[in-house]
Length: 29
Image (cartoon, rainbow, N blue to C red; front, side, top):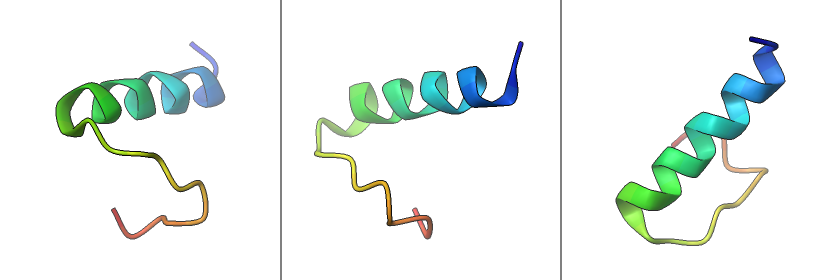
């Protein structure tokens, strides 16, 4: 799996868990 695809999957899972808006510039969380 390409790393960028894995990143997108992780973001989608994070959104599902938190139900919050995603800020691409916020890499601390």
